[in-house]
Length: 290
Image (cartoon, rainbow, N blue to C red; front, side, top):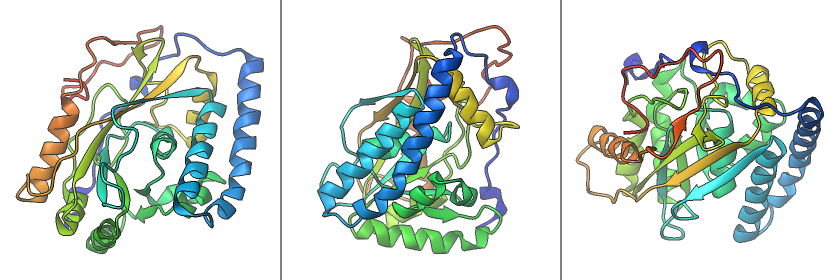
């Protein structure tokens, strides 16, 4: 695998608009307190992982949902309520990537094994919990290990698990998205399992919002503070139709099919939230909304 796999996003600080409405100081403080409390309660998930399958999944899913709510984020699921159409059959879940909230939203729908960048492992509390639920880490500085990662994912998929990837390989602002990188789609081909495209979209008061985006010079703390301030934030998880095994001849065609299906999700009913200080204009790249 060449270093050309390494993705880059043109999204930067100018893509993040100021919030049209902000929560009061007391509300922000309460959110921070409940978020920290919810995260600390996550240490008990170690015991939940010892429960039988369905009970374990329910406890983990409810915890991720509780953390979202603690941060003031509502969750909406559009389409099937699970990523696996057939229980115990593996599926590769391919999503766009906007925010650190993405992992919380995905696991709040159905806890799955995610492929994530290595630095997430060092996040306080949350990193350990995400690791405990089976996250596979990819070191973008050591891409020679990518074939080994693909083999590991294929074995996991053959075992009947749902595995999630952020197909763009990096975060975008949410108004636009990048090309889906084909490398990790090879795992679905090797395992002979379907691909389930999903689209994550954030909105405030019915408008697409860039507030949760984790881009540019953002640190994790900066992004968390911005999320705590915004009022009326909702994350939509759009679960699209599966792409059956055999529809694509190779990983590039499979990635293209997943991207095309995601692009069919239009948002003509949702306007972009414009506000004072918003310097973003969607760049001339492949759009998230067609």
